Length: 437
Image 1 (tube, rainbow, N blue to C red):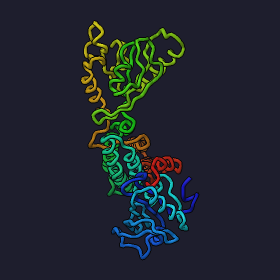
Image 2: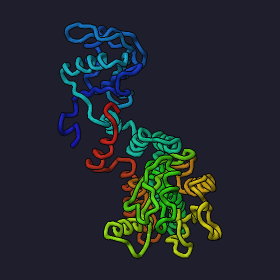
Image 3: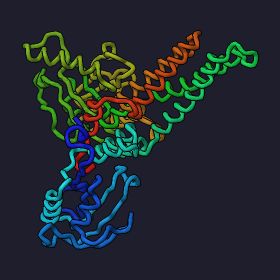
Image 4: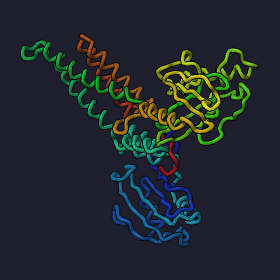
């Protein structure tokens, strides 16, 4: 449920939008129709010049001094939220911030902001679209340089601009289709030539969508490339898992079947986000039911891996296309390594760097390119719906039905940018933000 239904559209919100005190500076934002009055109530005098920092003494309703702060005034609609907006740049001590927030709470028409509400108001007032808002959410959550670059590109409108170009091209083609429908019986309209041109132009848009949809998913930047350690018992999986994770995440012992469950360790190696996953050793003669359950879970985890580090016989690798063969415990075994495998000893470090480099090379190929766009699952779904409608339009002989497929494709683009969407989806997105954003 949104603020518009719970609190009314005219309520003004406020929140600390910088880090938790104590800090060098604490930035408090106020957005809404009463922002100007609230600024005057705290800072006194007239409103400062727009978009210029002014030094003011802040006081509460009882004229008790709160702080000497820089105040800024951004009259709507030329603000980040599209509404009147004020910023108070305070000294970042806990008592100072608490005192200012307390004073704001006693001003009529103001209430504390909810998580993501400033960004939601920017979206609702047309300052950003939904794709840009998703990019901002990912930017706030970014933990690697690659994730930061990809999120910033989306937040700054990289995807939105591409979609806008496709929309404009489809609208122009839709107008040409309408002309065919309305004037196809006139001599100056050559339906065959015009129809061919429309379908060729439409195919160009479809190919561009398919190319973008084929890029690796953005979720890998956030969650990490899933690297699963799989193979028989006592193959050295857990020891090497701990070595690559940089900590003793998994128990290690010479007893077969020590690892019973899936163990995960998120790491960053060379700026690449990885989710290392250790699994139970695979064997057909499990000692008891708990180990059997672990083996079943291991098989499922291996099936969902992006990269499989396979410690067993090459003939039994689940998927050679996703696998890197590992000949582990090289310091304690005499058998020959299978061709193409990486020879490793976690005990003395032999081959560990080689294996790490092989994993990183494979992982980088599974991540969105640094200079490209990365799409999340929702965005992919919208693009897939648009591409399907375009394919149907290309193959449809009836121009009336072609026009309907155009409408479906344009509606899918609107869902991607947020011009058409559901409240539940919007609530879920903006709920990811912190208070003050």
